[in-house]
Length: 523
Image (cartoon, rainbow, N blue to C red; front, side, top):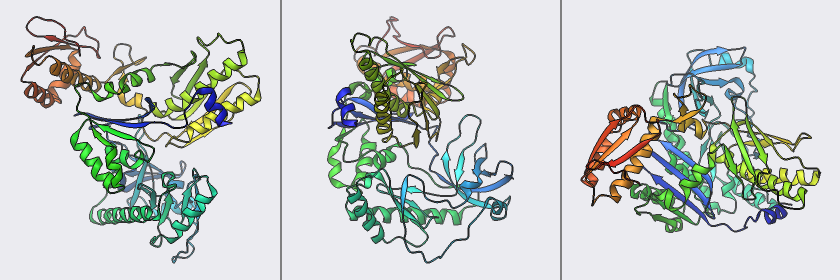
């Protein structure tokens, strides 16, 4: 069935995959391209590091029996939310198959919600891991079921059961991995999960990964013992390290990065995993920004429009609301075919493929409703549903999707671990009192710094004094927080930068001119 869908959509079996890494002063960006098409996009800024996965030694502040939850001080403005069921050493996640190993500890006593206040009284210390970052007015959500992700394994220090990801479906491969798992020297009381990327890997890779994770856990134990609460005892790796760990698989043909230091660091990290993979790393030093050279920037801009066009001429409309994400599918210009049912099927299949991609790119979560074009054939409905399931398998966030209903709606949920990309890039627009969005001063500063770098390099032989006209709010940000970056630009290009605030300018608008004759300079 999936082969039929591939043929209808023209999806190639073999893809040429590239990782494009852009490192700038204020943010780092990683894009995954498959045959030139943007499939994954991640952003990390200096002021907003992702805390999901970080481990804290916290202190219980209060217990709410009605909510069956505790609030834990981990050093943030808002206390972390710890539900009782996240405070009980839980069974393994439903996404893995358990593998029994003999335990010297014997059978653990079953813990119920009533026992929690006695185990974690107010004022007691508790070790927790962030599973969901702060969103809006809510504090982070945490769990006591710690897990540390390696390249091929996930270590669970408070569990004595191990397993294999259910995304590995081949029975022979699962049996081979079971044998490897049973032979690993795993300490008593610690559990291990073989990740999906471990499929087809040799036993020695798992041995090495386990050694690394156990060393990491020992360092965490030392931090726990040596520091009072609240204290961060483990920080989730930054975007560069997570990229090497999670994305750099055998399916990636090339990694291109525009920062030498970041590239060297990636080379060191990769060397610990596979020395041959270093040959896939390449340094980019072109004059044009790396995301523009590889066509990533235009795809990013197009992908975040409310209306997203499909190859067939149809389009989808994405609306993020407080309660859910609504996605509407329309035939648009795709109305020329004689076979109406085939036209509708083609539009819906392309829409399903694009919806799965957009969920990853935008990092939206919660309840999602897809309003597909009505299909008479139950077989066609099943094709669309199967394609959606297939496309959601590659999503690192947990997803659950239901078949298309009698109303033509497909309901699904997607794990919401942190703010969506639009929430982190945009803020409420002062011009429309929150009815729309406008880019933050930092985002405009990032874009201005990027444009200045391009313009000053382009005109460095002709222009030595540049004037920038922009909104006063953005100018205030430049003076108070980004002044050193601007001074560095002046030194690099032996030029002078002058700024003028204009309250009539839109928050996102800026103009760069030749200070001597007022001519506007384009990047």
